[in-house]
Image (cartoon, rainbow, N blue to C red; front, side, top):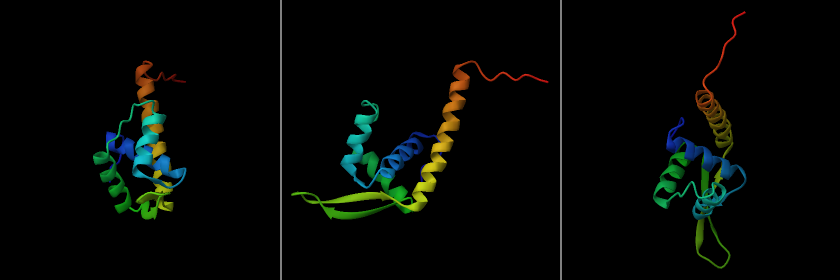
Length: 114
């Protein structure tokens, strides 16, 4: 499964975060990422579904099919309890990474020796 702060690891964090709000189908996730990121994340289905497959294989999410209103059957994805733990872990890792980047951009950390 994607991990760390690689592009696929960050995308997994974002997908888990979306699913923490409730079950969603693929196109719904693509649209939410695009809208919420002000078009920064223009995810394609060919990128999304392998990530979802990896997350499902790892037990972080589950999937099921359900009929959509007046439409064909859709595959929905939902977060498992293990997925909630993984989301918390990835969020902590991202925050540490982002803080490290910010420290570098701001000139580093100053230590005062006592």
